[in-house]
Image (cartoon, rainbow, N blue to C red; front, side, top):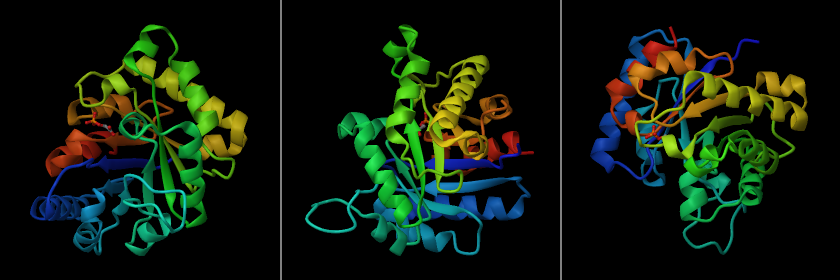
Length: 252
Ligand code: PGA
């Protein structure tokens, strides 16, 4: 099964207008000037979606948000709906990132509801899962990931409307990564769980990204693993050169 790799940048709560435009333009230019055999996605903060959309015009880079509310509209102060994201030109949204699960107490059930809302609007979801350091030390990684997949991924998920991102929480922003063998073991287990939930055909086509301290120097090894179909990149997505070098090293 050939799954085209997805190189996705999660800018998190970073960049004001000038910095965000410069970064988006640099990435767009580099993607245009190179022949990459992969798809690209950038997910700036809500405040920069319109600006970045303009900077990406004419490029093949997709635009995504970092969260969405499950309702279409209404009395939800401070929230953003999938219709609003669509209106701004977003094709993707990250849902259930561990930073939202921790900072905003998001549960698998809520993540699932948000994903359904996004799918109903025609937005592709990047659903994040991953274990804490403590869970890893207790040998619970696969059990935790299975349970998050069963709870967070909605029944309407297809290989077209859903991407999974496996992000061990202890690897995010720390410079630490699991061994390649550990990453492959977890990704294979995730695919098996997806097959149980959605059927083998869908599971075989669905992209499973790895996230957590992906850098230009470890991208080639991590992204060459059979069940790793791309990367969700935080820190290194804030430097155009690093983001592009990850693609160069991993998507030849
Ligand atoms: P990192 O973040 O690349 O800075 O570790 C990844 C993520 O949280 O998506």
